[in-house]
Length: 418
Image 1: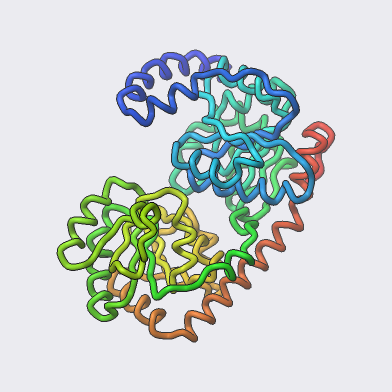
Image 2: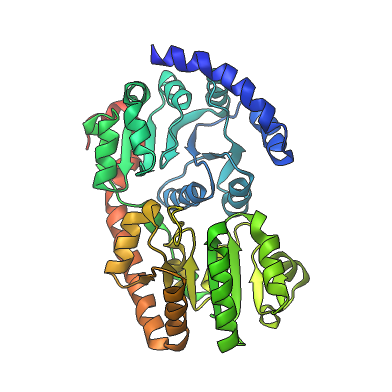
């Protein structure tokens, strides 16, 4: 019944949404590509769906890992142009990158048929009912990796539990990030035999070469900065530059719409340039006080060359961003108290002394200064971070045989393996 109701209302909702999608140039471009039905592809492929940038990085990590174990053909879908650009740059030789079809029966059914899908992997909480129903209709196992249901969305999902069960019960395997996430999937209707706690697949990334390949600069990076954090970050930057004139500061806003205001605030006192101009004109980063990161996919290499990094979206209640990323490059990480989206990771980082939580901008400035001046503190924090990554990666690798079995043999032959 719920399938019929959802499908009945999804078409008028889609037509209503089209009006807003065609208003913006960027969504108009992606709209054309999402509506285009591609010709049939030969050879079975694993379909990995990752909504946006964070999930796309997990998809990349997973493909890198699976490619080392056995030969597979991959298809990765996403919703945003940013994540599509990143994936095309990073894994174009290993996978085809497409925009995801709209969650309408006609589009999803055609997509699965034309792309010759043999299994569907959904990253984190990409729960699209028609995508799941149509995969099951075609006899394709549906797997959720890095499964997470946030504190913010869980109350809504619980209220809609009567509807959620209609497609959550169809999922063949959930590899959850934590025990709490696993309990929430069970509550929403996933078969208990199909749920396992795997840990966070962000730890699966290979990092040894990344640590040794980049030379550190006397630089500090403020990554994924949000609008409400802007004024406090600007004050911290100006204070640090007064004390340490040779310090290079990178600012990477989460969205590019605040780049202009950041530039106007800084340009009167400091020498400021955009990272895109430095890249295209081969300028020296050391010639500038502040570099505004206005490109997609370059933040990891900027973390790599920094002495220390602060990850934003965490000093105001945004839920936090990827606080693990700097550790892959041996860079100590700082973050605020609002990291609900990375709760388990933040606890592991603090427990392992691989980074520091700061409660406000004053504490952020003090901690940055301590790490800039104290090389021993930086080195011990770096060492702790790399140990944490190695330990967690080993734990996850041991359990990934479950995923391999589902991909290779299908859901039916793996019933009750957990």
